[in-house]
Amino acid sequence: MPPFTGAPSATYPDTHDMIRIGINGAAGRMGHALITACLKTEHLQLTAAIEHAGSPKLGQDAGTLVGLDPIGVLVSDDLKSAIESVDVLIDFTRPEPSLKALALCAEYGSRMVIGTTGFSTDERKTITTTAQKVPIMLAPNMSVGVNLCLKLLDIAARVIGQDTDIEIIEAHHRHKVDAPSGTALQMGEVVAHALGRNLSDSAVWGREGHTGERDPNSIGFSVIRAGDIVGDHTVMFADEGERVEITHHASSRMTFAKGAMRAAQWLKDQPPGLYDMQDVLGLKSIRS
Image (cartoon, rainbow, N blue to C red; front, side, top):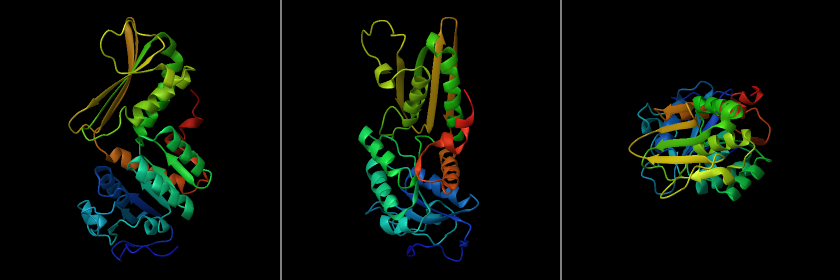
């Protein structure tokens, strides 16, 4: 592959056993966390930091961007050259730029870790089709704790889900643009699947006015957008006399960033296919 113009300098050793990482959306809040996590993870080498054209951060060293020492990798808007220089691209942006990056990954044979949420049904089909060419890890939440909760939700739904009212409550910061969160939707999908239901038929997206009694087969969603909440999710299984709640609180974006680095390391050795964090963590082999 031709060298990327922002290739590491002597301050950031280039060794053959390193996995070359590119980060799309490097200047955003999640981008900062991803850069920091990459620089602190053994066997990973940041070789590309990408931002949109016109970003005021273009040309800045990725290390100084996150308050660390310079590493010789400059923030660039040349997505094509960046993808040519990486083994795995990590993308936590928005659907349109994620799909643009995905097409280039397929063209140049780079793997991709996608943490972007808000994809439409057709866009998800595009991802699934592209995964026939290159390995893709798609997960709305890469926190190890959240993915453990998904396994616990599957167990809880199978044991008590038919006899309880199920509600999903999620809270995020004021800047989040999609609702419910991708994580809340994934939680709902896990519960619905365990109960043999279709989430699109069971979901109640908030309530207002005279709603009548609760449909016992419904799965309710409640959304909060406020302040700087990183991410809170609770799934409630409520019966008369007791309820079970499975909750995850994220206090730092680093939990998602570290999960993404773990995913990148795992994905490097996988054949083409569409994977999720349950695959990365080996949770699919644990019987419910």
